[in-house]
Image 1: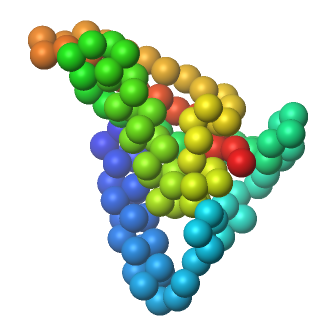
Image 2: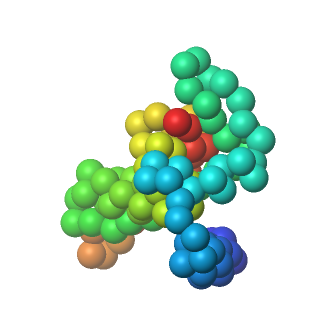
Length: 113
């Protein structure tokens, strides 16, 4: 999980530098084309590229919301808001564990638009 976080931090820096170099559309960054895509129902989805999110909360529901918010935030940053709805994503997986201060949850899913 730490390696994945390091990758996302490095990618965020690269994307920030690229965004400063030129304009992007409001709803898509153009980076989604780096990944294979397939139609799933009426949606276009990443074929095998997953995004991840994690969150903590006093209740399991709060931790789940935080994890989904984390997933959506990074997906929006990387691909734009068209791809950043967890409700549209496919291949969803979620896990939660209880800790001394509440709950920790992780989500993963393939982005769709």
